[in-house]
Image (cartoon, rainbow, N blue to C red):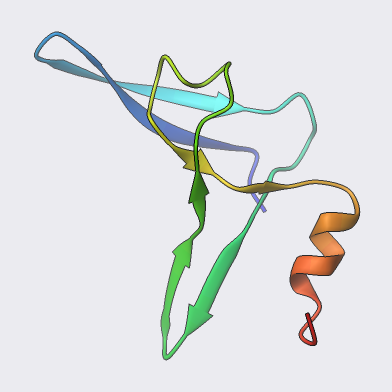
Length: 73
């Protein structure tokens, strides 16, 4: 879970750090873990993020959170 995440957007040769947050209090990212390593799963950006970056973390909402965390799933 997180309250925000950062993406870098390009403006010409300059890169600008952009904080992205949700109107919800907490963001839950889909991630995978194994052998002491982890990764955050990404997807195509939502229309509101597409001008910043070409991908974004998969954000789990509602019942998707519980389903993602269920070991048998």
